[in-house]
Length: 186
Image (cartoon, rainbow, N blue to C red; front, side, top):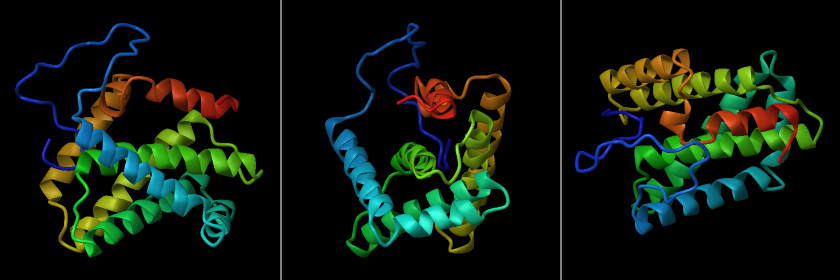
């Protein structure tokens, strides 16, 4: 994939993990550090006493709660990306995608904790599609994303969803975590 979707290394063929595989991710320490920094910064944005009420209000006022969740996540990711660019750094598409997913889950948990809305698995999956569309539309509009690459990513995401294999794109445990959000487990 050339767009936002994670790239498989050409040096190592993909390996199907065992059930409940808890091994090491296939990333360098630098990539892991950049991911953790992105998520930590995102969590700071989400929990900021000026931003958290805006996020919760956006979700609460949204007619379609998945739209509200997606919009809030895209806003946070865009804020982080713009901040990095202003400091002369670029954030890799893999980090934007995977980190954005983790931040979306944190926003959904925050909405539940504050009694704004309890997201179910379908709403979270819907929010993923909506967020990718919103982010892609913004990025195509400002010239930072290739339209054809985005279309390929959306096609791959839809195929994985139809095959019940979103874990292969978002990492082992994505579907399980979405289910936990639905039931309120941590």
